[in-house]
Length: 370
Image (tube, rainbow, N blue to C red; front, side, top):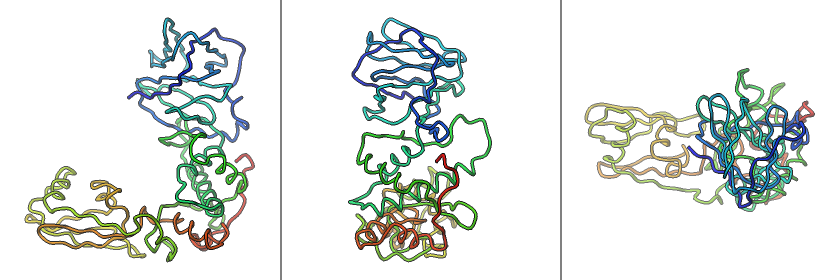
């Protein structure tokens, strides 16, 4: 696997200069969040302006003698090579920092700096960034429709709560990162500036259940009911009602590939539902017996773009099976489209949170470093 990280500006490794800390790029090192982007890379190609590498407390500057450089695993350390040069590092990790803030992934700038570490015979890649910058980047990714500020404030509280809960429950281990995410903290896409303002306006605000942080979640649209409440607001969501058709033969082939020893699939029925009416398990009849499959597993087989939620009905015959559903996502916690419509009707973010998280308390998190 190759992780490209390239800009059009050229550079080459220079000589090491004064001792330096990578955290110079993070305004508060205690609030830094280490986000693993990948853990099995064969190489990493880098580019940008004003870049230097930090290894063992020493800064290795970059000049403009080459187009790009590449980081490769070498013995127990790293090899960095470019046009006409090669440099070896025997440390367990190196940091790639830009004084000009020009580090880019897929040509989009992101906050903080990169840490590359050895992961067996491969490379691991971490984005070290400020906590609030990461939250703003997540909001930028999760932004739907013409979301108003009150909806976004509610979402910021939910994302912050969920992340802090995840960090609090993280078991002690030797992982060099705090969380995993496929995407870095992009700062150049969407309405990042607006999202950062939203994050700062709700700084430290989280949801509690008694004395503990609540396991807050969110989804696109609930289809009329979340795991806790009825929701009359999200019918305006794109694709609110959806339909998926599949032949018995096609479904049987997918089940066979997943390990089911099924033959002659006949019909699909609803087996069990959750308390709020979502489908949790399906019963499949076939020539050689009965089989059962959890809805989540079926979504993985078929695709969540086709079976968009677990709020659906099933019908069909020997020629075609039809699934008709509502909403998109797991239906737990905050309904984003319901929140958008509540915002448009004049509700404040505290009202939105009270709606989707009944019984939870909105408080300030006690750790001032977040």
